[in-house]
Amino acid sequence: MKKLAVPVVVLVVLTVFAVARAAPAKKAIDPDADRILHQMTDYLASLSSFRVQSAAVDEVVLKSGQKLQLASESMVSVQRPNRLRSEQLGAANGLAFWYDGKNMTLACKADNSYATAAAPATIDATIDKVRKQYDIDAPGADLLYSHPYDILTEQVTGGKLIGRETIDGKPVNHLAFEGEEVDWQIWIQEGAQPLPVRFVVTTKGMKSQPQFTVQLTKWEPGAALTPATFQFASAGGARQVQAFPVNCRPGASGERRMP
Image (cartoon, rainbow, N blue to C red; front, side):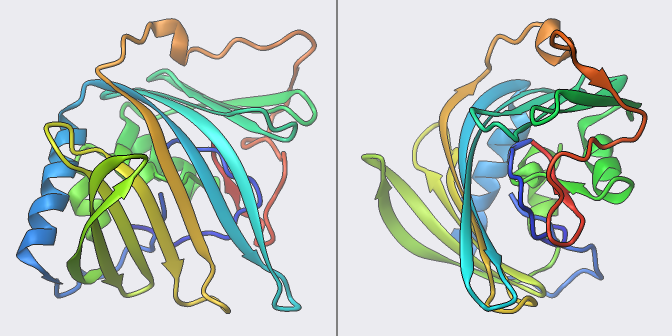
């Protein structure tokens, strides 16, 4: 995982948390938790395409110590190995992101502007590029990698199975992991489609330890997605700008959340 930013805009390229790459930690993951996490990540990696809706709540801590919770909803479409679309639903200041294997475009609803830049050849490389080069992050992006288990456990020092619980009337397994910079929890649906349905990340190195929560619903494994889904088409009167990313609503740290 990579280091969690403090966003003001949340959209999802899917999405989860980010933690700085560091030397591999000594992992002490309970065998049951490790097995269930492997089942989920192997299943996600096996999907050639999918679509999912997310409802995210991001905590921002003000200088006064007051916590604010910022909510957003997004729809994410993925076609491996090199197609991705994420669009915030409803919000007037929302963002939308398109990646078609050659170019990536970030559009801002607030001022009807967009910017396009050349993109790498894979989803993995594209996520890395927007994180490192443009200071943009996406909640849930770690789940989009071709080998999500490696990314999720990159800085994990321990993990355990909390137990069997229920979300939206369906049985799920609740896992909790400790890390060098963040702790995180994940709820994974039981059955033949072990999909993640809830994610909570706690940033330990920040004052008041803010949390990021995302609920993942309306999963469509194997969704029939056309090439047009991932090709940006500007709306009437849209203004193209040269700088990438579009400066829609920067966060307190200057970093931005990608859709």
